[in-house]
Image (tube, one colour):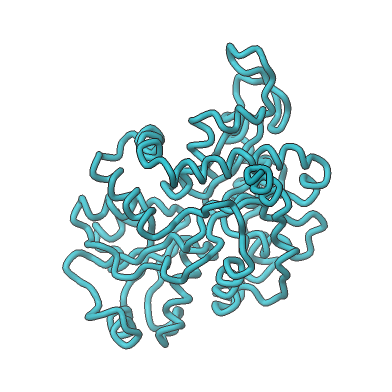
Length: 360
């Protein structure tokens, strides 16, 4: 199963016509009423000035992406002359949305870009960091847990379990496989990996008994706790340290042809990253607005976890170590068999310009 993800087969799986068509319709719906394509100037309602509309594709709507939502809601993108719309594109389509031109950029892991870039004449390059920790946690059915966090106890506990590992080839899935290998288990033989394309099903699957263990992030974690489906996570992947988990990436041709827009987007993102970490009340207000169904308890739990685990990048930089930790998961699990370079996947020129200007 794993070898089937090696490019080009892995990438082709997400290029099927129905998926691309569905994504195109989704983007069309997101842009309805403006009469323009993504990344073209549109008039800001009642403001009397023109904003450039761009679309960012996200794999799932998560509280971890809060800085990007803050940049939208607080007008940081608008200050830079941009109108940014975020669309959800599940099942790996967030990357193909950029390849196809349906989206200007993508938020996700650079490892997905590495897979998409094999044999590509216009590679996807990461330009600003957002989530600098592996934002994935393992939760077990309520009342069950390993004796301790040691490799021996984890191996004993995980063996034979049904694990909702999320989409095959996605980072949460790969991290789960990485841990299984690290404790001495064969992901294909020693456990049963359930791999639904829709990452929002994790709570339901454990609740209904279809899975014993699930991986996920907020707000799924607190949702499962509130429903008494599981207890606190028994394993936290943020412990891996600096990890380029969710970064914003664009095509290399976009950097070459329109560096001004990339710079403006980066300026707004870094402002939002710093605001979210300096102003917890602002973060809370925006989180509640973005996820209106979350209870006060859930909002607090989500933010407390994010701050405790140093979830967000402080300055937008993607370090070589952060990329290395991410790619090591790909390599150890056998998904990525090629070679990569930091400069081939990451371009920090815009982040450096933003931070240098702020330091003056």
